[in-house]
Image: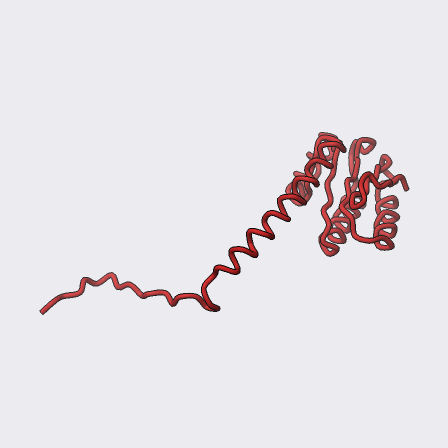
Length: 147
């Protein structure tokens, strides 16, 4: 398995060409399960066309990352592989980057944005009305007649 840390909380893995994608993804999942959660960049530059078992392996890897609270980004994805993912309805399931550096920038940006969103959410939560908030007022479409 060709995987290495590129930052303390980011691991990068390079997949081989088919038919070795799925077995390599299984090894990668095992490797990740034995480590602290970290974001993952998967380089698909050697994968021209991905098979069904390879897609299944990517889905399992994505699910594992989501459960661990980490992100998965695919980079250097060939046009044929993107088309296959689109045809099977999975193109929008994965996050993509052109290359490893762009993927790393995206992870840095999302981590910073998540921290900013968390602090904004905490501020907003502290200012919110008591539990339940104000009760909605029912409006009637009938005009009120005065006598």
